[in-house]
Length: 444
Image (cartoon, rainbow, N blue to C red; front, side, top):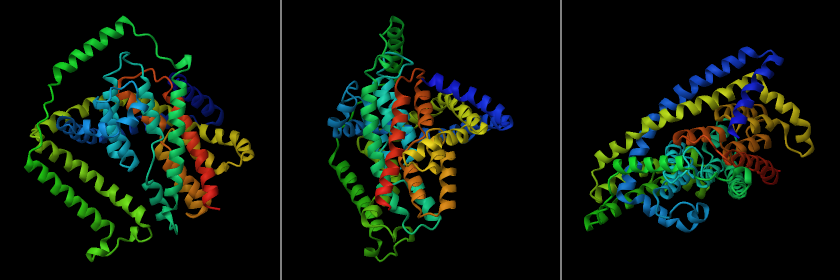
């Protein structure tokens, strides 16, 4: 399916650009997005990837990943029946989902790539997405958001009286999207057109070579038992972060002024924001500390894991360039504007605000483009207008499906995406429709 979508974007971009006289914009869109894919996304991502892959190696070596997987085993084995309960992929996926829920995009993407690589280690058909991979990608494109930080910030900057009002609507919309994504991915994987092909002899040989190569690289993990002093250190550190959390959640108790951005929030929202603020420092310090008390050589293991970051990004770059160039050409040609005009009459019939159509069409393709449209809507209508709140809910409850697909599948060399694209687009569609309905009910 991705072959047809990519080719369609390129061909329609040239045709539309020729008809509308936007050929220069088509060319500029191609070159600008090629530069963006490498210079603005891939290169900055190398350092972030190295950091989180190093932390993940410490989590694996210390047994923390296995612990996380066991905690959510009842849910995970139902979602991913093809993945062994004790496999590292389970823990990697749990950490990615947690990062997505807290809005930690800098952590979620590297953790998601690591999870996809772990899933690929179970793949007997190199280059073809497994059912587990498609399910994981669908969940990522519809991941439940506790706080849509960027959308709330845009409303606050534009002087909304209650910028946090979209937190509830975004949460409900992402729940609808997540449920629809899981249902859709389970239905589609059973259809004849998306069924997994038989395993060929060539696939078996490639898999055997891959397993043999990984076996020579990886040494057996020996997890040392926790000593009494290690337990004391971990308990003391946990108590420190508990104190820090409470002091940031209720600063007035400790004689500190309440920050201006938290004064209008209720206690629940304030707690989630505080947890999001502390999540990165907790992850970056607790995993190395836990590995240390398990008598792991933390520095050496971190560096060993971080080495993978560069190789992973090199594999991603061609996929990102291909996807983003096609999107840039289509946008430059005016394809989004043309689709908006064509669909506007039908949207009016179903009471979908036509002003939101450009945002709905761009969201699966471009995060920065969607942010620009959202900001423009807020500026034109006011931060507290129902259209602005609908737009904020859409932005906070949907994902750039094609970017996620290019990054995750590019890192693992997946060429046949099977039903991952339609499942992700269904999740985006459900989230957009749910956002409009929920906002109409909440913000009359």
